[in-house]
Length: 320
Image (cartoon, rainbow, N blue to C red):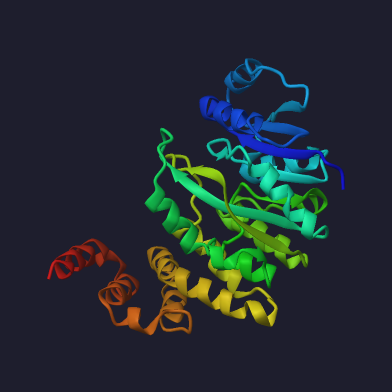
């Protein structure tokens, strides 16, 4: 396996944040690197910003303007195809790598040369870059990036379903990244990264979690969410997955977590039969069903026009 690591950065109309992201790559303790930027922007500001960055003989910075724009999934897929290293890292243009990120991820291959992907923890930062440690701890806990999970994961599919495999900041073998399709908005909403992780795991891959912070995840107005807005796409996809037995509990866990959001989406779309089927199905928590949340959802399904009134009732009940 060659030593070159390719860092792939998709960007769109965020030149100042892009510059910060690229500079975090230049600050890496590991060499050699190539940084590939795929630009969907509507102007040339990103190109101009990158042109002002001092050169480094151990790093090759490559820039490509997408005309027409490729969209998030298409941009990432194109970047993966352009990667020359046998391993690559995805970094969103509003996020940052910690200085020893690449070195820590590369070291995972020392013990496991056949490894598919490696990843670590994420800090959560504000738009202006302030670190929130409490939010960071919660983020990593929710996605099972904790010290008790360190090392080679028992089941990559389980890791992907639980979103332990992160949205970016991971290192992956380039041949696999190029082979797994990245599905776009029409198929998976904005959950491209979640769907991609599942696809990689289903390729028979092996994942390694290193209990160190690898990147800073910035919460910006344009940050892509993989929560409620994407549940209407991902719930049926996850439900229909053929997974190994050891990952079945993870699939059930994810479906139960998504079920309330999915019911709400179906209710808003006035798909009454489907919404009721999920509400009274195996993936909707029985305790939640008979709570205020469950009653409000039932009302939204049966009488969609009463939604504003139901929300007011719920607020009143919550104060008691």
